[in-house]
Image 1 (cartoon, rainbow, N blue to C red):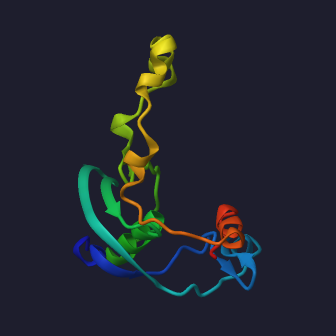
Image 2 (cartoon, rainbow, N blue to C red):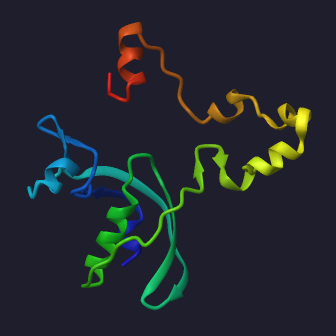
Amino acid sequence: ALAALRGVIAQVPPQYAALKVAGRPAYARARGGETIALAARSVQVFRLDVIAIASPDLRVLVVCSSGTYVRAIARDLGRALGSAAHLAGLRRLAVGALETKDALSPDQIRARGSDARALLRPANDDLLTLDPRFLERSAATIVGAGESA
C-alpha cells in the first residue's frame, strides 16, 4: 500500500484544508457541514517508510514536496488498507536546508551569553535551496500577505 503513495502522485487535499473554494477556506465550509469536492494536485513523496509498529499504530517517515498534505497520506493509506487512518501526531523535521537536528534550545543559546551571535548562520546558507524570484512592489505586497501573485 505504501508503494502507491510514493513518487509523483495526484493527491486530493483533506476537507479541512486552508484552500479557498469560492472565496472561503475549505475548512470553514467543512465545519459548516458542507462536503466539497477538492481537485487533486500533483505532489511528490520522496520517502514513505514505516519506522515503527506498535499495533494499531504506525510511525512513518515522510519526505515530500511542498504542498503535500501528510494528513491526506494517512487518509489514503487507511483507504488502501480497507480501513481508516488519521494522524496522532505530526512533527516537521526539515524545511529545505533547515533541520531540527541542527536546532538549539533557548537554554543552549542563553548558556552562550554574549557569544550567542556566533551561533547564527547566514540566512543565505539556508535559502540556497530556493529559486530566487523578483517581484514588482505590488506583487511583493500580495505575496508577503501569503497570497499568490
